[in-house]
Image (cartoon, rainbow over the protein chains, first blue to last red):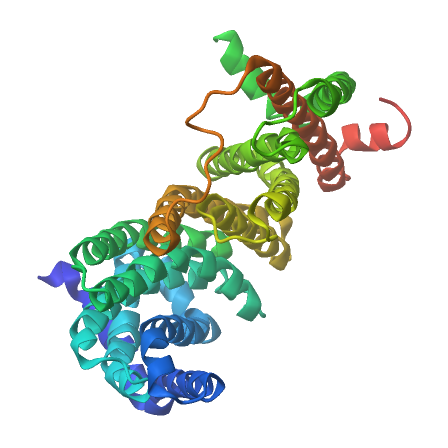
Length: 224
Length: 249
């Protein structure tokens, strides 16, 4: 068990830090509600027009809000030197990346998934679509976190990374969005969401194997 | 050592690569010009008009070779990225950085010609067709690589970061392509497919293949041109670079 200690320590530290700055963690959730508010206003607030668009809007909103949290993924670690300690330490950097990604997913992926019913309520999403909406979001944010991990690691030591992060992350979000939003749309049209959800899960698993090693490599490059 | 391996090792040396590019660039550029002229002439004047699309189909002589190149160059860029990361060969970093703008240019040409072709054929400039959509995503993948490389102050660090992104991109391109295809069939069914099922007649096919060769040679020319000037800039302190800058070849 002791071999897992550094990774559990990093996970615990990230979660503890987030708990001490609760307001920062809630910021993406507030952002998501604001974006949904803007959409509802722009569309006119009529249920018949909102309901068919609810699932795509929620999916895009969740991806955008999650994207906002990426800049902070390594920012603190770079500023206070913790990142240099992680790089210099003897524990596997890939393992540490898994801990990092897990912490980020628990905070923002799960957080935004739990906030999704509020967004669904605001957009008049039909109630029978809610289970598949939440399932797809939980699966999809797991993959999105991995994409974010790579992008955050690549830009960790850059001073300005905002728009660059968007440029890196958005194209890679596309397949997740297609199957995530597609699974909800399938149910709306009376089909089974099984295929789309399985493909979404497959993608998240694939990204889960690809991203932590890529992120570790990216951090080592920034360190040279 | 096997001659092919020896050649690769020699190419890793900047002065050798510079001399190689000086020797071959005129050939690549010349062949691109000649083949391009033949291909354009055969495509625009000799090949018969399409019975379905009339004259507007002729844009494929630019569109299709560019589309092939846009993917080929991304692949080559990623291969160079892998070489740069594994063997730390400086030349591969430079080739990767030189590939990106050329690939982005071919992607942009593909999109533009696709849109121009779409207007008479589909009645609108933009249709969310699976291939056009994935080509648009590809353009942003190129932009991402270029922007990331430019964001680093240290050029070599930027190139290596871009290499990681290019590799991540290359494994994701098939996923993006198939997911867009899935999305496309889900939402609006197959768009008109003129090519693909029916085989092209020889008189239409030959100019296309000639154009495909011409774009390859153009790419080789542009790549060497970009790479050698970048190499010269990076090696400006070295003796061989100074000698070239002072007028020797």
